Amino acid sequence: MQTNSKHILLTGATGYVGGRLLRALEVRGHRVRCLSRNPDFLRSKVGRDTEVVQGDVGDPDSLPATLRGIDTAYYLIHSMGTTGDYAAQDRQAAAAFAAAAAREGVRRIIYLGGLGEPPGLSKHLASRQEVGRILRESGVPTIEFRASIVIGSGSLSFEMIRALVEKLPIMVTPRWVRVIAQPIAIEDVIDYLVASLDLGDPGSAVFEIGGTDRVSYGDIMREYGAQRGLRRLMIPVPLLTPKLSSLWLGLVTPVYARVGRQLVDSLRNPTMVRDPSALETFAIRPRGLTDAIARALRNEDRSIAETRWSDALSSRGATPQWGESASAPESSTRGASRYPSARGTHSGRSAALVAPLVGTGAIGCGGCAAFSTCWWAAWAPAAAGGTRNGSLRETPSISGGWRRWNPTGCSGSSPK
Image (cartoon, rainbow, N blue to C red; front, side):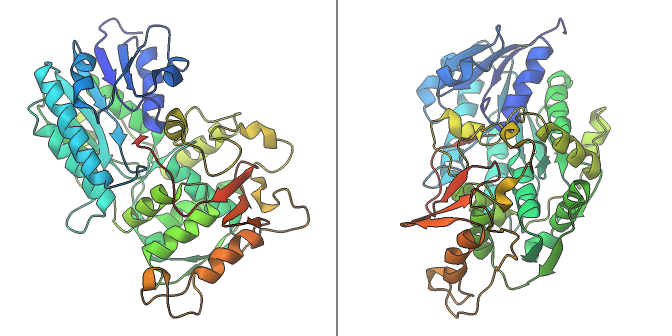
């Protein structure tokens, strides 16, 4: 425990990154105040000395009291899982938070955004970088970290990758599987976020952070498969659009439809570290992909990951669309495969699928000239051992329960 503790405001404490950062800050003896729209949900998850206050970045009037007396504020919030224009919501929330922080004399804002080089950024990545710019322009010194995909037990990226590799022995893959990224382990992300508390006085700065390896998404899936002892065949299909990819992911991975669509759209952008200043400024040496995946798998062997990306949705009362709950203990599957979705509860029905990403029709969703997805959208759940229940299709989930495919997605904003 360190003696020179700071008074810290943590937003997004119910999210995947925020929840892990909270533990790290508490261990180091910092005085932490957590901003939450649902304080009752969070209070049971924090340490004895951690303060939880009610507030909402979407409600500017709630922010001044929350930021009063704070030295450093972590801004770990995004609205990608909400309805409406999430980029506009993020823009307004960041502006309100930055203005309140400036008025209350906050000395530093620390923010986690995304890598990517304009022009041509996806809406999601462009929004993440816009939020960083708004915070930096507030007058409050802002440290912005930009990361590629985060590898760790319970992260959205890791859950998507492991679901694909575990469920599909043969994959017909779109172009984004060959896009280059520089993934970083969640432990290294947390180390950077904590270390920035003690950074001198650089004013506002942007640090690009990543692991030691530059790899394609296909490489990440192959490395995961190798560590799990799974051989997977990937067949590239250059004509598959991001929209069709997102529909496919909605069927075979445990991600919410709306979040999945935005995630797939972002996968077309290379996300590599081009500025080495983070390595020059911090004494952190990030690990490589092999170690990051190995650590994630070891953590998945626990009864439940320390935090999961879906925790943020649970904290707002959103109903998960897969499994029995957003935090169903994976220990319930011990004694068999940790990923029992290949069987579900219908014995004798195999889900060792070949993912049929493209059909033979001439018209696709929305009336665009593309390959038809209607037939495989109806076929895939049945092939996975699922059943059709009216307009909802049920398929076995990665956690061993059942999920309902809901084309309309989910609601609620998403702390990181």
